[in-house]
Length: 385
Image (cartoon, rainbow, N blue to C red; front, side):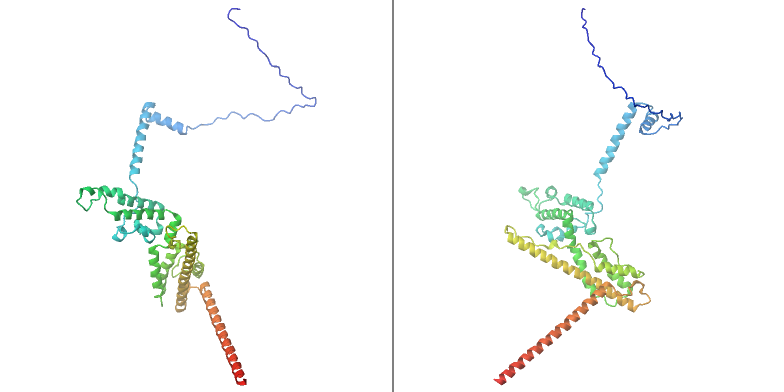
C-alpha cells in the first residue's frame, strides 16, 4: 500500500527449566518494616551557607553575588602580591664586611670562613637552610658583577672605560660568596666545614690554654670553667640529647652518667676538609691512589688526636672534681663518692705502664748478667790459652 512498508517482529522464546520435585519453598521471613519516624532536619553545609549569603548579603541576586566575589578575588591577589614582595630577611646577611673579608682569594676557598662571607658569624653551625638562602640572596644583590657595572664609578677619566667594572677584587669576593653558598647548602660539605670551623679551632686553642690554668679551682669556678668546654664539644655527638655539666646541687647519679657518657663520647667530627687535592693535570692512577692513601692516613691521625684531646678534658674535669670532693666533703653531693670509669681506666693504664717498666728493667738486668757471664767465660778461655 502507498508509502508504507510492512515490518516483521521476531519474538524470542525463553524456556525455563521446571522446578525439581524435591524443591521446597522457603519459610516466610519474620522481618517487619520499620514504622514511620518523624525527624527534624537542620539546614547546614556549604550549599546552605551559600544560600544564606546570597539571600542576606546580595538580596538573592546572582549578579550582585558574582560582582562581590570578583572584587574579593582581586583584593586577595593584591594582598598575596604585596606579601610576596616584602620578604622576611630573618635578621641575617647584614654583618659589617671588613677589608679582610672583602680581599679573600677565591682560590683559597678552603681557608675562608664561609659563615663570615655570608654574614652568618653570629649563627654559624646553628644557621638554618632558610637563613643561609636569605643571606646568600642579600650578598648576591649587593656584590653581583652586573650590578657593580652599572653602579660603580671607574677610577679613571678615559671615556673608553666608562661603565666598566674595574673592581676585580669585588668579582673575586662574589666568587667567594658563591662558594660559601655551595658549601653551606650541601649537607656533607657543611659537615666537613663545621668540623674544621676556624672559630671552633680558636675556641679549642682557648680551651687548651685554659686547661693548664685549672689548678685549685673552687666549686663555682670549676663549673664556670668546664661547663662551656663540654657545651662546645656537644655539637659533635651522634647521640642526642647530650647530658650537660649540671650545677652544684647535681646528684651523684647525674655526675656518674655525665662522665660515663663523655668517656665513651661518639663524635661525628671528620677531617676530610684537610684532604689534599690531586695535582692538576695529573691523570696517573698511582698519584690518585697515593694521595687518597695519604689523606686517609692523615684523617685517622687527626681523629685519634681529637679523641685523645677530648678524653684528656674529661679526665682533667674528673680529677678536679675529685679534688673538690676531698677538700669539701660536706658539700660533695654533686661529686661521685666512688671512682668514675675514667679514673679507673687511668689507674689501670698507670699500673700497666708500671708493670711494663718493671719488666723492661728486669729484662735489662738479665741481659747485663748474660753479657757479664759471656765476658767471664771469654776471660777464662784467654787465660787457659
